[in-house]
Amino acid sequence: MDNSQLLKGVLDVAVLAVVRREDSYGYDVVRSLRAAGLTEVGDASVYGTLRRLYANGSLTSYVVPSEEGPNRKYYGVTSQGRTALAHQAKQWSEFAGTMSDLLVDAEA
Amino acid sequence: MSTLIRSEAVAFYAARVRAELAGVDPDVLDELTDGLAADLTEALLDGMPQDADPAAYLTDLAVEDVDARFGSPRDYASELAAAADVVVPAPEGAGRPRRGLRAALADTRAGLRADREAFVARHGWMQTSLEFLHSLRPLWWVARGWGLYILAFALIGRRLVHARHQFLPGELLGWVVLLGLVIASVQVGRHGLWRNAGWRRSLLRLVGVATAVSALVGVVALTSVATTDHAAQSWQSYEQGLQERENGVFIDGRPASNLFVYDPEGRPVDGARILDQDGRPVLLGMPEYAQETWGYVGNSGQWFGDSFPSALLPGGGDLHQYPYRYVPNSSLDTDVEGDITLAPNVTIPPTEWPEDSLPALPGLRSDSGHDEDSAASTSAPDDVP
Image (cartoon, rainbow over all chains, first blue to last red; front, side, top):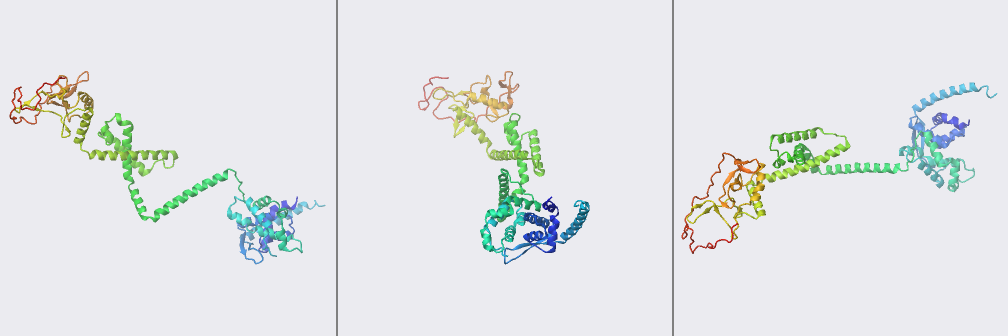
């Protein structure tokens, strides 16, 4: 299974985590994810996820004027988003622990 | 890093992605693709060779390069929509134009209604007159009931009721029917009928129009009837009948219903027969005409006022014998064969002469001889019919 399949399930969490660390615009988030090691993630998926999180209230947005380029729309996490992120992060670590235990003999 | 330099290829790519998402709500579409060109450009610049000039790099970009980097616009669009949980409406080939037409019609109707309301609002007088007309609606309901009566009568009642009662009932049943229809019409006006049904409403509207027309006709007819002189009109029809038959005696344009002969001494001559220059009897209305009107009399109509020349009765004499003896309609009867007879035990009333006698004319004698001064013709008529 390649990472892209895995990523679909956790893109929400990953994006939230990135934006929580620092308010970012679209490509910014892509860059951050790639830098963290998620090279398989598609740009379009990130942008779509950002919009979905914004639509369900986990993210807020504001426009920042720029002299170097066009005005960019920045995303930031809302309190609802923070709560969701904490909840999902807990779930993820539990899941990761379970999987690790399960697979402890597989690598051998 | 500056992204102010626009790349034609990137712009084209972004436009194609937007096109793939046509049909999505415009606000959602904007949120999805607002920063797309900028994001694409930045991504491209990230992959730029280290020593390259950004401006030159961007402007030199070909469409295929962009497609190769990001995949086909269609795939990009579907990935974008999927991640955003946005459903892209499938383009319907024939459906879209139809939706457009319906939407256009709805817009036109809304626009027209808005225009009409704005127009009425601007002209306040129109508003008040509309309100006035609206308050007259009960009157319309009554008129509608009456119109229905007229319509109903025209369609079915002609054989049941005399034609005279075409617009207003003459007997109790007619009044009951008219009242019932008026009440029904008012109730329908107050409470409505079949408010929602489509074809039934159209049928009701059609009936409404028909009754309105017939009510209008009724109003016109009644006013013309009320304003006519009945006596003159009956004379007129009698006169018309005579003119059609080309018979009758007219004094000052009015037909005579009787002739009275006086001799030179001024004495009344009863039973005088009058002939014209060709020996034809002078008649006041032809017998055939009388036969027709007899049928009319049978249906409680009238002719000659309320009476009937006795000459038309069997054995009653000749129609060119004057004066006519008039028999009132009430004294008439029908015998077994359907012919007109005098009712039993009825006598024909004596005729009233306009003058008991006239002054004697000088120079004329009552005997059969003629004075030579007389202007009357001395020769006997050629033939007597």
